[in-house]
Structures are given as structure tokens and as C-alpha cells.
Amino acid sequence: MQWFGDCYCPDKEMRKLPDVSPLRGDFRGMPPAMFTIGMEDALADDTFLMHKKWVELRVNWWEKQGVP
Image 1 (cartoon, rainbow, N blue to C red):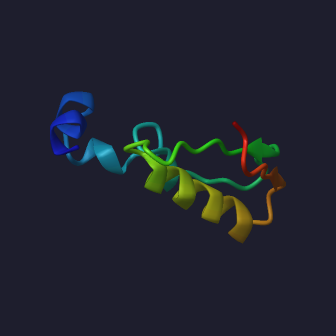
Image 2: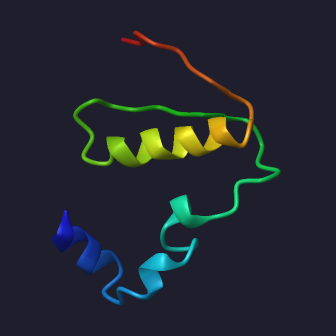
Image 3: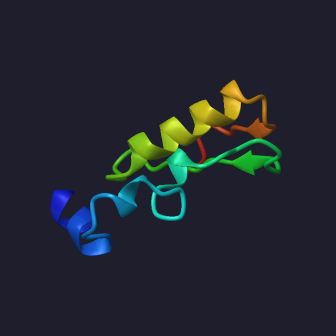
């Protein structure tokens, strides 16, 4: 994953910006969201963290488990 991060944004300071790392953004006032996670997805942890932020800020979201 480090290699992908270095290719995506070589400047480590820029990685702190919300435009590069959305998890660092301000989520207040965001519209409802649906989170889709593939358990074999290399970025699944990021999706779980994004969902956690949505819940903490009480932004509407919905979940459907067991989708084929």
C-alpha cells in the first residue's frame, strides 16, 4: 500500500489535506450516504473509518448486509 500512496501523492505533507485524504475533511452538513464495502477490498478499513465519522456526526446513512 505504501507504493500506491507514494504514486498517488508523493508529497507526504499534502497527504494531510482533505482534498487528498477525505477522512481528514469536515463532514458537517454532508448529505446521507451509503457505504459499500467489499471484504477483500484493500481500502475496506478506510470505508469503516468513514462510516464511523458519519455516525459520530449523526449524518444519515443506511446499511444493507448480505447483498449478493
